[in-house]
Length: 522
Image (tube, rainbow, N blue to C red):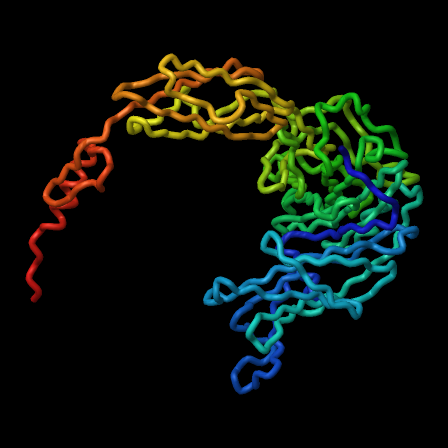
């Protein structure tokens, strides 16, 4: 099921931030893109100890504010802008491995405790339109009487024009005045909200990023990234990300979206539809176009959505639909479809890593994660080779094996188990039937009780599923109890079967080590 959006007062996160070279640009350093270094504020530690303000501290050597990286521009009708705060801490090389700093973002009289995920520290809040404030990252380490502070970073929420209310600024190259500045826009179509994020790129930044969040589920966050080098020789570049819950929500009111009947599968729940692209300008925003294909070939746009998983029995992949960011002289930017079919040829699915579903592409386009079902089938990992071995079991005793019945498919599997056992030495514990929902598994036990010193064979036949009947051969050998064998004082415990040649050889080696003469002490 696609994203569910709930009105304009959205409890979700959004900010725009560039790569490491443009991170944490405090005060005058904003022009140079220098990261904010940590400063140590002593509380209870005398200056005589040599740890005054401005020196690198012992435990935390640097604090970098990763988001926001510039001012945020938004439309007149938006009273509050959700803001995502993100910081990175660098610990000293000799810091204990279990060091866990507590981090707080201070801004506008608030103290926002941060949570740690993916190695970074995050917090969220809302900023009213017209806000002018500063942001400081404060870190403390348990057992230390000191605070580690980043330099104060100035931050502003500016109002710019969005004449047609489509969620895009009328003139983005004016709205985004300097590298690191971002745009936050909304448009509602029915019950679907389109979220628009833009970032003025820094050509020196290894990665420029625009994160957007699902307003219905803040655990689902999309991040679009592009290297600053994608701009090539262009003077300015804008990275754009657009997130919507369906096709029409992505393009209305500027035009209809592709027919839902064209979908190549079922959308992943929470994944939504995501546009990612870069436009560049060589005349300071008077005109713009796509990046040079030469630079696009070596600087892919990457994207990832966290918190997504395919349903049990399904496999997921990114698909792309042709779309481009265009402009109308009267109303400014708009997004338009430029094709009529979904395809996997122009987008690479990088994989699902712990719930982060990512991909990459060389051109601007609409992408969405779709899932397709696997056929219902029965898998038994322990019998992958077609048989299971009980080994040697004493006469009259029971050997037990556990078999796992697994259904990796997208539909339920139900079937029966038939035992063929001419000698009557095998038994299935439990009912001779099974029922497995999609993606589920269960276990069954099989017993072997040999009456004589012989090799025995039986078969289990499973029905149900696309790959059945499935036959599993049962193999076991009966062995009688024998007298205890003693070899140089080394013997098996009483009541155990006589060891085989491999066990005897091991015993010889062990006993030889035990009776080896000791070297005289010097």
